[in-house]
Image: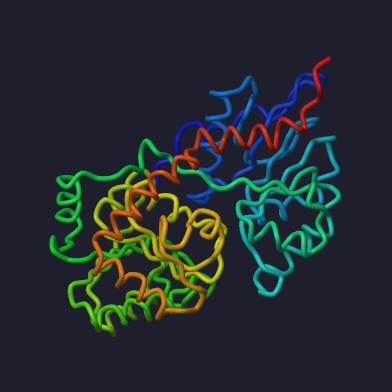
Length: 362
């Protein structure tokens, strides 16, 4: 994966006392998605506002600064240090449910220390409602969605589409379904399913489609897709699996598909919903994470309930059989996605998260 210099380079972490606070966005430097969030947020803020925004690996030595922890796991790692250094602390929690064992302990630690956070950022209304139900003051919550780079993710021309299909080994006359998010345990083959990502539901939906439409083809990306690949092979669904090492090569995958399909039970995004709309690709997915905030069913995408493979298959089938509906969803999706361009979203981060915590000029 190619990470820009702005992410790889660390800035000086000790600022002189009395100087205007800077932002230090604490990212893991090991997670493709969060590292790129850090890049787009800090770089766009520096372009738009007189505010020093940095990506940091640690909070050591910081005093009187604005510190933003990029995820639930980054926040939990530093939760015992929130009172130190008179910093203003912001934590982001993209997803998680206390009813699920893998999240319970981490969420309980955040809630126990909630008074030490100045703001809690969520990316979707589902998480906002959960935190309110868990007793968090709504005034402490700030909901700002994820963003997408509209300069890189854009509709492909017919020539680009044909070229991408040729490169990837996708038949030119196939109806190609894309699925680009990791849904297996670990970072190797992923033969053990990560059930919150719905790989079992995805395989079921695709098998149903294959039984009725022999011309479907599946393009998979991301690591750890072994469970899905085994399921597709058992169902006789043709596919190709491409693992990109450079985030900026992901748009070429969207160039090659006719629909993007999401079968998750739990999400904080996913970014795939934004990237699909920006790429002029119809979206079909479950009502998880950011999806219900972005997609109006039948207007700019098609939605199904969680754990309903029959409904997902039926939605894709509608698109196979109705080119007019596909064009309608694409047009409305391209209109909707303009609100999620990273410069727009980064501006909201500054105005709604950071600026209210800065000292008022005298």
